[in-house]
Image: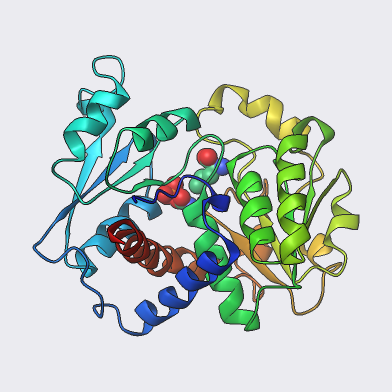
Length: 309
Ligand code: CP
Ligand code: NVA
């Protein structure tokens, strides 16, 4: 049966750890798996802009023996002219997988419902699960484990990254503490889902408006832009509302001295993170960006195998 990856909890804890183990193998031996030999084509569709996702998926598909077909949806028939269901029906007969960056998460669900090849969410308004796989890989490389570690995310706790940290890191057995303005708290539904998952993984999820409380004893500090793609009109308002939630040296000093700093990028120095921190010794953001490649290759190999079984 075909498997899709639309959100972080679409894989079990065991499956997530299998994907991360495979990612480490592929990082050491980049061309050791060739699921798309033929070559088969993988569609990479973008409704929003991208640097890392576009490059890492294109390079990854090529490394796996395939051909990446980058589709800019603005110059395709998708959207106003042709439905998602009809697009899926056309693509599934010609490509080995569909990777899509879009706005409404429901679009991905519809694409998956009409596709017999794996559909991967490469960012929606609600989730960014491929990024979390890369983040988990980066944390695992640094600490040699995931379960039991504390990750604190400071900033917009109601965006795609916050949702994915909650679900993805709790799946890995981590403690996830979110901090941000009350207006940007995570939905109760996501918090409950994460804590339900945590009951079996040992992980947990919480939200507070106090960044200082949340970073206490943290092993990992993460943040993201205060203005996600599609929210540009709210820029000035959001900058004012998020004042006091910058990950800077003073805040970082309250975490464990061994703490590492993550940012999915692109970063806005002086807003959600100071230049001193992102360019400082505790930052691992360039490893994190590289790990998109290895984590996504593992995901594509795993999905191809599962979907054949
Ligand atoms: N982190 C991330 O998804 O980057 P891009 O928007 O450049 O793809
Ligand atoms: N929350 C950000 C992530 C960018 C990779 C956005 O959606 O724009």
